[in-house]
Length: 197
Image (cartoon, rainbow, N blue to C red; front, side, top):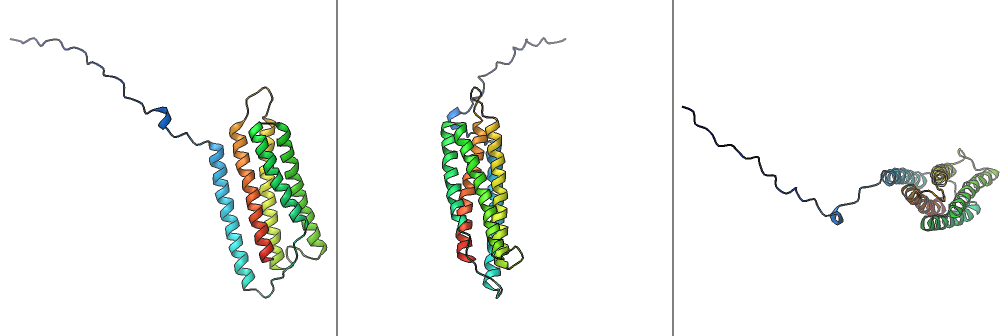
């Protein structure tokens, strides 16, 4: 004798789980800006290590030769600071002319660094002349190399900046962050070089 089982009703689906409110969600980090922050951390550690090496080498070395920094470095500083202002104007107004001005000022800065190296060479100060001149060349050349990287980023933004198209805000924001860091880093280097060499 078999007992008939009553038919079972399908399971009733409850309400879908509630999603967290949009306002409480953290915005996802942008890969370009994350990459720039990683680069900033790496560059900062590199220059911190070089600064430590310079301080140790300079304090315990009878062959440390002090020399006067080329005056063009102060003009270069002004160029780099003004370029930060023009880039900020480009970011706020998304105007290509401000971006082009920033590129021009950045190129003038790098050219000014080459002029500073030639002025030192004319005084007989080369990379191998003394530890102080070696640190000067290493600091300024490494910074100029990173500025060239920043110029490449600005060129990328400029090439993708079309009047009728969307503004590459992520790339522009990342390039602006990096460029401002280059200006702050240069101020730090100028102070260190003025004090130590």
